[in-house]
Length: 334
Image 1 (cartoon, rainbow, N blue to C red):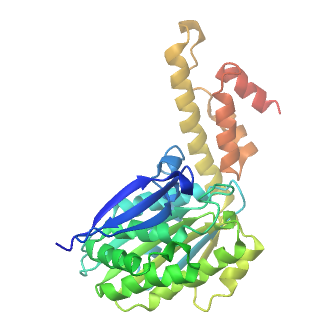
Image 2 (cartoon, helix red, strand yellow):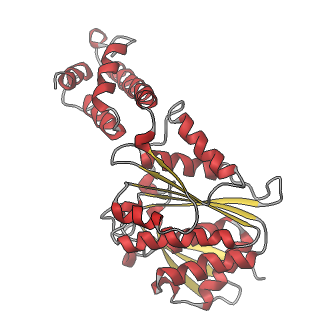
């Protein structure tokens, strides 16, 4: 009876969106590990945030997916870009794809798992790195029984691990359990908005530590990291002794960006049109092709390359300040 039962309870001491993961074993010992509960891509706090629409970002997503799959890829992929260019949406899309394609036994006999952490500036539990490795460890603990048992043992061996330095947490909760697992594993970790970690030295340390996992025999690490190209983060990558893959969203052609923005506006405004037509009087219904390709072209020109601006425009058009037609005309008159 060495089976570990994982229980999750809420404890307000660690904030509104923190959770406590406790591993209860047959000897009834209980070790509590605080995590940032809303930091994962599928958390309550992330549930209304978008993923990429079908047929958008296709080339970039394909490139990232091929990086994940290739056995010869660099262990680190850094996607950077200025605020509003869609980094978090891409990260959520990748985290969702990774979770949906997880397998416990691939063709080569290995296990493919994933974990995620979405930093959020100013958030009590996601605005810093204190719970970063505990949150990653808790996800891995629930995804693989053997690995979970090793992580639970590490927590029992050091009940105060939650208060230790990040490097100690990394070594005891992540690195050593993966080494002791002694079985082929491929783990991809998605970390979004590293620039929103309030302590830049912690962010730089995470960048330095994750590639160390690639030295574990029979283990493959893929870490997909996003951030603005701010100096502290850039220096963290430049200090790496290993190779890493980097793409700046500013490098993507304007043609592809505007093509994706056209798809976005067509989808978002089409939904606004359909919702409006369900509730308005027959004489006030919008035309089936509203707003039309010319107005969408003008909106794309206004928003490019900022997807966050496109989202803001659509929220304004769909708000209660007037009819969608009137709201759209206000935007185009700017």
